[in-house]
Amino acid sequence: MIGKWIEQLKSRQILGILYSVCGFSLVLTAVGAWFGRDNVVSGSELIALRWTWLIGLFLSIGAILLIGRPLIKRMTDQNERLRLKQIKLENVLNRSKQNETNLQYRNELIEVLASKESLFDYSSVIEKIVLLTKSEFGALLLIKDGEITSVVPKEMTQAQQESLKRESHLLKRVMISKSPAATSKRVADAIHVHPYFIYESVIPIMDPAEDSLIGCLYLARYDEEFDGGEKSELTAFASQLAISLLRMRLYRQMQQDRKETAQLINSIREAILYVNYQDHTVVGNRAFIRMFDNLQFDYKGYEELAVVAIDVEQLAQRVDQKQQFVQYVDRVMQKDPPEDGLSISLDQGDCYVQLYAESIYQDERLRGTMLVLRDVTAETEVDRMKSELVSTVSHELRTPLSSIYGFTELMLSRDLNEDRRQLYLKTIHEEAKRLSFLVSDFLDLQKMESGKQTYEWETVNLLQLVNESVSFYQETTDSHNIYVDADDQQNFQIQADVEGMRQLLGNLLSNAIKYSPDGGNILVSLEKMGEHVTLKVRDHGIGIPSSALPHLFGKFYRVDNSDRRKIGGTGLGLAICKEIAKAHDGQLHVESVYGEGSTFICDLPTIKERIPL
Image 1 (cartoon, rainbow, N blue to C red):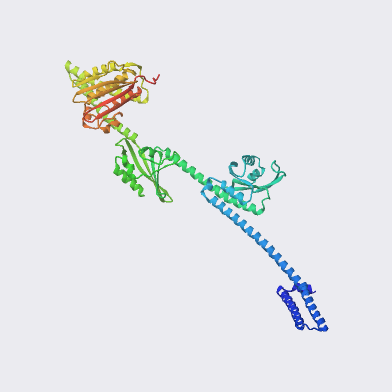
Image 2 (tube, rainbow, N blue to C red; image 1 turned 45 degrees about the vertical axis):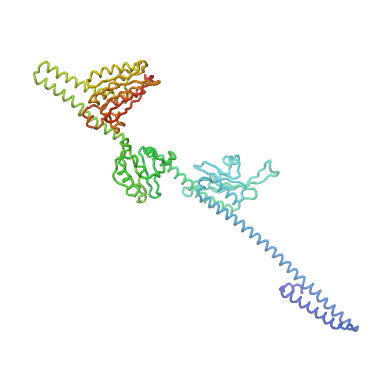
């Protein structure tokens, strides 16, 4: 009864009772000591004193036994409870640290998934997931059209990866059902003494828009199987991975589209310069780089457009119409692209370009302007040739035809004497021959350019052919002296077509005579150097302007000045000469000083490398 009563008391009440009993015992002891202070105690007093001390002792012992023992037990229980609470707090602290670590891993995983690096390397992603789930190993499998395209492993050998791809029934089941699945299997190997279990889990990664499988997350560990919370967490990871994989697919598609666009623009023959107003960048295609090849561009290849970090003044260095070009491009840079085009030329008329601007809009806002530079040199040359052809036909055909028509009409309408008839017939014959030469030159040039001209290849003594041609043309002029400069001791034999070489020499000598209207000396020289022979025809005539030299060997080309217009001609002779030299594997070029004369130089090999059958 007393023990139960004491157990019901609070610790402070128990201590109060214990202190009271102890205090009462001390009082009894003090009383006994007071009676025995003078060391004179009677027998009855001594007995009373002993009983007093004995009662105090019993009270102290009883208080200790009845009150101290429950108190000690209660304190022991409190200590045990404190110990258990400490253990519980330590467990909570450990769980908090573990949760903090897991939270750190999750944050790192989210950062990795959100970073640009995850678009190219998923090894860090699977590494974080393996650490977070305390797995032994794992892999991220990328799937396209039902086929595994690649495996991103963590702590897996190549053999394990191949086994996972080809032999894992769990993976095949998930790929078919598109639902998470887990399994366990007993494994025995040479390393471990006893068999052990591997717990595997595969989570599908789905494209929510198309409900298609784009990947799988595979994890495995030895200790314990994946519980429901971990599987839910893995499903959440799979959703985040799906977003990342779709970002990667979208990014790669954008990169591929960008490359295809760059390849498409680079394949266009027109030079293109794109000014992006939003990004403040200027890029050009391969044709633009080729057109302005004198400048340095950051050209990285066919799959990218070159970044153009060059100002307009640098681009305009080769433009003949510099001011108009700079004004046109400045308007494009200032977001005010002109609606009209601009025709320009480069390198003093060596190349003709048609320039125009096309505005690019997005969401009804001006995003950029595409500046197109179209090389119209060929079209310009065709137009020039048409004009020259019309001019030639109107002059070179109409003049002899008018003479033939006029003299035949006189012969038909009048009774002429024999001398007059002979004079008229001779004139008609000369004009007809002139027409025949014109038509023959035109037809010959057409056959040469189309490769249909036939040549009779044989060994030709070029010095002998030069002497014959010089003798012939010397008879046609009294105001010119034609000389030959060659070493008679050298061998000037070459493989050539005799008639072709005679035509080449004849055209060069005829031009030298025609374009030296005041007469003078004409020098024909031959020089042999190794396996080549150089033929030069030099006159002291009116010369050729430097601006006309690049176009001199074009069809129907006539130098546009009054002195040459008076002389006349078809503009076909030099074009024929160049084709003949080309057929002989040679080269024909000219050196001229305007007002002082010209030198035509033809380099010919002594042996033709390829003789067509």
